[in-house]
Image (cartoon, rainbow, N blue to C red; front, side, top):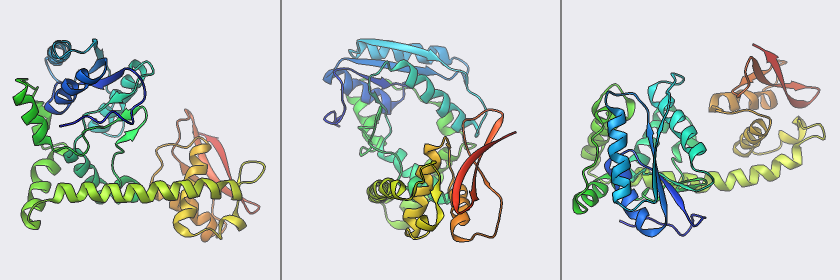
Length: 306
């Protein structure tokens, strides 16, 4: 198992350590390559989580990390338990990294599960493209490594990883994908499904990144001086590219957590105009909602009080 560091900037890096086999194996390799700080997030969702976090901290120091920091977080409820925990974790890591890149222990198995989630939810190619190996400040050097390899690495290094009981709770969608759906697909299709899903993610990610680059160029060509989008010019852009132009424009205007449904609704203001009202899109604004609307042949954004 090799941690790829060629594309990761900085003389030092951080590693997100849960204590599980994936992040523990990654920490062991990372600490041998560069000065590494382990960041251990204590979600506080299980009894004894502080003890688990402290054990991970001690393991990190024994593996040669220059520092190991336990960071307690408060997990909200927005988006469900898995999404809320992820949001709290990433927010804490972004604050604690102090400008250094952060290594994450996601494996090929995690990528396969992500692709299946995207397929099942109909989230479009961007979701099916999965996680990026390098998405600064986040880096996933184990994204091509199977989970069984990280467990074998821990055995070889005589490390005892934490067995998260949540990984066996079938109320979580990912757990059911891991223990029920993927094994069934492997059986029905004769194996190699996880690797095939990961290859699909890579191919779609390459296509998506190319189209995103073209969309930025197109956005400059259809944007008005006031920052809106000229509908006449935008309507001549090919469908797949036009929706990416709309997405880039919305994000630039303060939108976030955009869904394929929202983007297509805004697109219909261009392609199926019937005098309809504005489309509400996700944003980080409090007590206000962000809308995209068509006015005088131009797409514009505005806010309204909640």
